[in-house]
Image 1 (cartoon, one colour):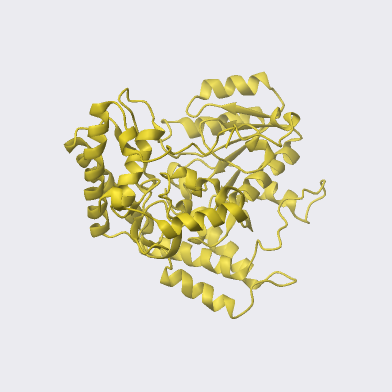
Image 2 (cartoon, rainbow, N blue to C red):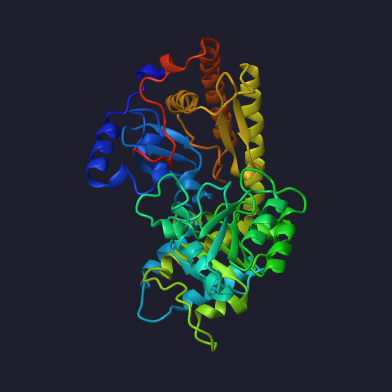
Length: 441
């Protein structure tokens, strides 16, 4: 399909309605239409497996489904059946359901490095609970976050450190300090500078790059020596790296860890897990000051916990993590070959673990470019590929990947023309994509 003929009139009208009724036009900023070429932000009608259809009737091979949450594919039969069974039995009660026990047992059997778990609905709730718990356990005020990771929470302790800090008191932001990923010496210097003040180190144990040899073990030793809590944000790495996340793969056990995204295959469920002595501070069986850890009306909805159990079982029984890696390796190899064939291998760069691939779009000077990203996404969309990333789901087929690679090759041919002209503007047909975190709209 020629991109000049690729129009989304119904989606365009629906986006206007979304902006009229919903701030930002979406419930997650990363799904906003500013993340897509102008007037080419499809509004989704439905999905099945690795495909989605927009309200204009176009079908796409989809990547990064549900912001990485739908790792088994849309409407997965095993997950949906588990959810349907629970819906007929009631979803929420005045006392805990037996499903809560079963889900906790299943989770802790899959993530044996943790002793206790508490479920919630989103990642921000559980990372903030981990921060509060670390502060309570240590009596210290400061939080040390990895400054190289783009998102840890929607709450003030993290958002205050981003360009979108409006509404966050400076006094709150001052209690959050940052350390660079992979640099133990810089982290130790930080902990020494704020000796006795840092409650926890919180980071994604791995995302777009592998941890340097000995790095995670070194963080573990630093946390122990300086008396702070080590927290792994496993929202992305959970299940995608191994069934037990990065901690299961690299053999370094954090004090607390947080899971979500793939855990529910699109259903709302997240988890805070960790050492019993820490987690019990949020319980009833201790003599210390009580910690208001997590207390959510919908955190234990039976159908979401049933979805999580079905996901965990499917991953273990069907070897899903290995399949994600195999699919990702095939895709990465194809994209790199297509880029090389069109002479843009230094400009369309695929990065990350095979189960969590992202791509960079670089300009003539090999610098990251939102304008070239706009060109690239515009061509992918016209070819029936919806890919803000190349994060795979296990529902992808070899034919889906072949189609994606063919579409990438066509996009790379246009990319080469833009590079030769040293200006992608003629191929943008509108404003460029914008970064999520920016001060002004």
